[in-house]
Length: 204
Length: 204
DNA sequence: CTTGCGCTGTACTAACCAGTCAACTAAGTT
DNA sequence: AACTTAGTTGACTGGTTAGTACAGCGCAAG
Image (cartoon, rainbow over all chains, first blue to last red; front, side, top):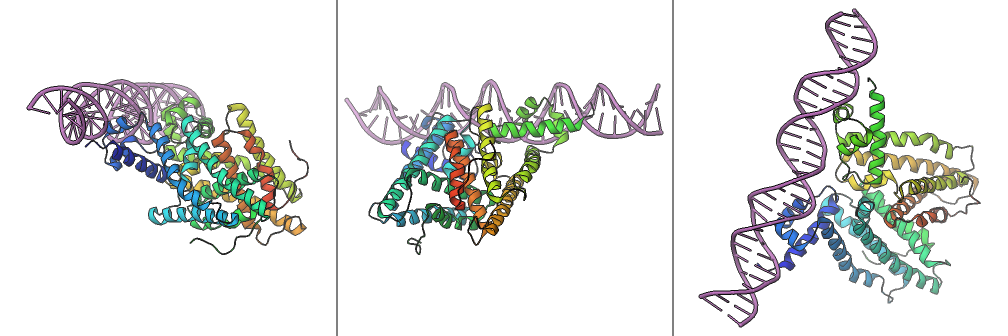
């Protein structure tokens, strides 16, 4: 016993998994507890409400992604390589989930944000925050690309947002169609929006 | 009495409204019945299940939009005007809902499709079908634009999909941010993807 | 007027929901 | 060994869920 850390951790990762594969509304606290091998009492010892767990889970999930994102968007890489690697990463993550779960699941943040943004202000804010983080990465890369002359725009932040909206749209539509082929159009479309051409893929 | 038509109709429109403003999972059959002023017995006389109602509701909702879409995408309009009017229509619809409901609600089809596509195959298929319809409108307009030389692409269908993904992404992100300003970026971004410039707005 | 039927009203079920609680357990402290 | 306390357990509550059962209503045809 005496391992609150384990319990909390198990609940966080189980929650992400179940909500991603289903939806927030269709997953009960009992479902999460059962899959996590945790008792209900422990759940409510660790988290105040179901919503609190979700917010904590997405917070942790996005924090875990930071090192990977920091590496992809490292200033040591040429900006166009960063942007290309970002696309590859997004697509590869989706393909990995497709292979293990058998369905295209889309972006876990956007899906939940979309489902709950009119109903749970805490979750809405968290998803907004995560989107801003990604847009910040993209803006930096685009700004560097503009500086080296490989992208032409007078508003890198705006262009970053547009590119991000496109990524979101592709992921959602791929989920609705449950079609991994749709994901393949992410990188070319992304390139078109930025007005660039990607060389041969660097990762994968 | 003896007015099944009214009952069904009321349930269909109430379902769209409530699900759009909240989510499928957070709205109960009782909620829909209460708001529609219909008794539960009548509900289950008219529809077999909650899912059946939803599918019928979205089917009807999209059918109601056909005349408007047919007019916007009429061959009598120059293709770039059609595309511009489509953007304006999307944004205006969102703004209208924002003004009446006080929130950006995003695309009703995409939101539900995203929430339920891993759980309810019937609803997933309906949403896929509706997306295909919109993409078909866009493809036609882009094809005509290519013919007159105002858009350059060797794959109009693919370009239409990319433009559609962008629209979806903008609407979802505007919903998550609950920010009508985001909607204003729809038309310029849409234009950038197609590689065109819109003249002064034609409608609105 | 009466029989038949399309539809409605309402009470019901059985499962499930989020959240609570008091008893309990084990590890650390003295 | 006795005490403290962070963490665990699982039964419990009160309310909600989708869906059902069925009696009754009013209209239309006979």
